[in-house]
Image (cartoon, rainbow, N blue to C red; front, side, top):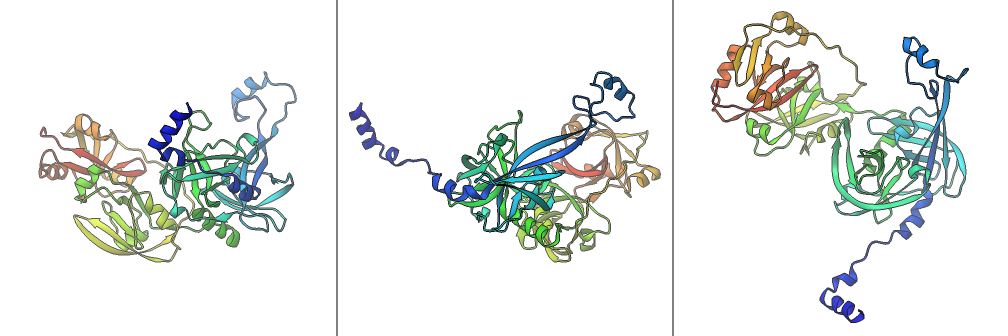
Length: 456
């Protein structure tokens, strides 16, 4: 057996050199700067009873099965992680860890426990800054997440399920991930074991530098499944600095709704390759509208930085100071165009009511679509000067994703005013070609690509 092993080393010398990294020094030096964050909240409702309003008739029904004089409120506790970014007690963690907390307790590696106060938090990026009253505390070293490489080893320290100062390791799986409803963070994806309680803890590179804050996991069970996401530390520190100086976060906006440029959309707009952010609607009177940006424009660069994917634009605009004049490069009707837009400040979202719509008879059927003109009343309801109503969608139209009730506003960059005009425009397009239809659906707009067949 010994001779066989020696022979393997001669034939495969790299096997003797291959070693896993040693994380011990990293943990010894950086571990003391990581803390456990526990919170206490008061929640309303009778324990064990469904969350039903007291004026609902079913409330009295379920109340019969509850113990008499059951408390109407209960205290709940939750746990997360955090880390010192300065020696005077400032701690970074996740916003969802401290949101709604009435009391926050920070426990250090030396078993000291101290109450913390919230300096501020930002739900859009899930970053929170809290502070304890102490000095000469251990703090982490900051790294540059832009220098991270996919496949690089990374280490997480946190409190999964309350097990304090637990260390897990893995590699960077991807960079710049965009997640649904998370437009302002280019997440770092890792396969580091992250579980409930790790939230808010640091992600280290092998130099012992923090490159991210562990924030989310993808899971079908609630536990680790090999896909975790961390907020890049440069994004988190920018938020923390704003919270520390002003108590709030200021972001830029230009007033556009965008979508990803697919291969089919790139082909229909004449783009050499799928890239940029496709504008499917422009806020009337907003910064983009005043700058001359139009629906069907593809934004390729913003303030000198490339917009490779649609998810890049919200981050670039959001990190731009309101009042800044930014140069924008757009692709319009097969040509590049440079525009200048003055960035405004992003305000809190406001709800909007959805207008009702009425179907119009005498529809025109083409490519699986039954279309009809909008009445003046319908145009007022949806706030558009043109468009045609989709009465029914079958065949190629249904396959492309069109639905009954959609309103087609344009073909490519050509605005549609009537069914007759729509038919004329489609008739001029070579069969088999892919067209981009700007569709109004509810309160949003989206480009849908459809390949034209030879059957009218």
